[in-house]
Length: 95
Image (tube, rainbow, N blue to C red; front, side, top):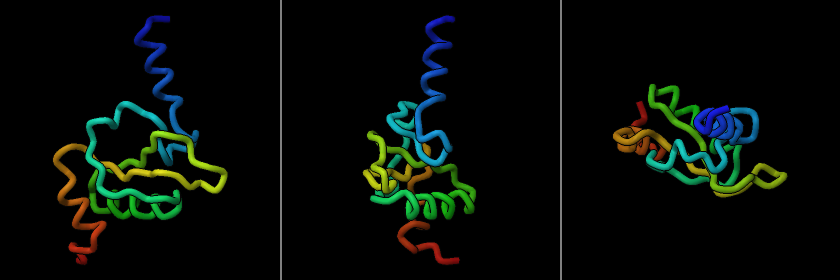
């Protein structure tokens, strides 16, 4: 197995196994943080709102969440999408 294949396999395994949140995943280092949350349920709801408006969004954290799914959770979007996502999350785009 090549070094690239091992890296790709490791990146694919990062997260909680459900594709709900990416833990320590370097693929999102350049993405913009729109909002930070302390619980996964709230973060998932806001991620879905952003996605429902056609903006790519992911949840990330540098560390595993605790047993109550709490921690430092970032709602992130690709570069160039921050403004539109921020409007949704702050309630400035209510239509």
